Image (cartoon, rainbow, N blue to C red; front, side, top):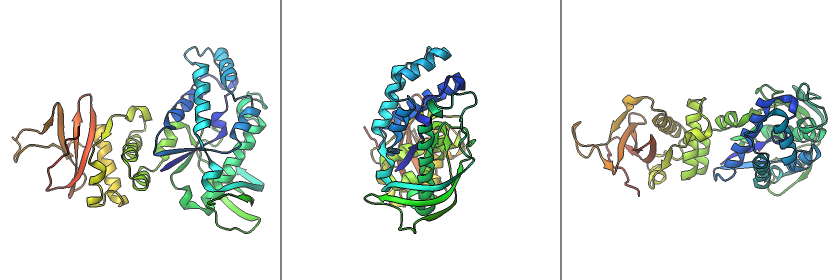
Length: 357
């Protein structure tokens, strides 16, 4: 499963001084992540103090702050109620990051961040309101502290967990965290080993992906495929691979595929469920189908031998065969409207495809 950690800065309402583009990025980000909370392949995480931080910044409940923002910037197309509901849904659906890693409380003092959080995180915005409120700053430092400690001391737990932000102070390059850490309280299933106290945390890079698109593209589709092994995870991994191959596409623009009834069951027969190198080749082939690339590797799947035999059909759906490599092939159905249903993975001598209903 993939995990997403929401930076409190991303959830706090931007100031009017940040402008209409920043306001639209905020709205788009909330709507995207709120829609993804129902996805079974993705775990959305937030620190336990996020709601308190947003409340202290007068950003939760958000309807009044968003309404004032939209009125000041003339954003008539934005519904403050819908944005506020998206934020509430995100916060109510998010799992506790502390419970997820079993680190109930941690103190990093002294704490060094490079680059440091600006005193006022947006030029021209009031220092004590919205994203620039002290409570949001403190909550963000907590996110970075816990991220760095986990990345250094529990790297396996950190794999395929991305931090999503709308804060441009780090220019998409991440933040280097260092300091002296003390684990104040451990919860059940704590993923950290026992550490000396205080623990001298060396300079550790914490990546902060700016916005939904960059964060989703940073997730590892191969790891998601191998670790989850479900039809939903396979579909999500293919969509993530499509976004990686074509960075101009967003998540909603990749929703043109289905997973056939026997697709997942066909994967273990040739180790396309656990072998990461094979999974990477299969994902590349699936993504190229959706992107209409490398067409010489694609052929019609026919009812008989020879190039003149009729193509297999399922109503108006066309059976297709695509090379994964010299030994294995991907069979899929091409549906109307450039949609696709992936049927099975087979060796090069096999020409069957499931006729799922």
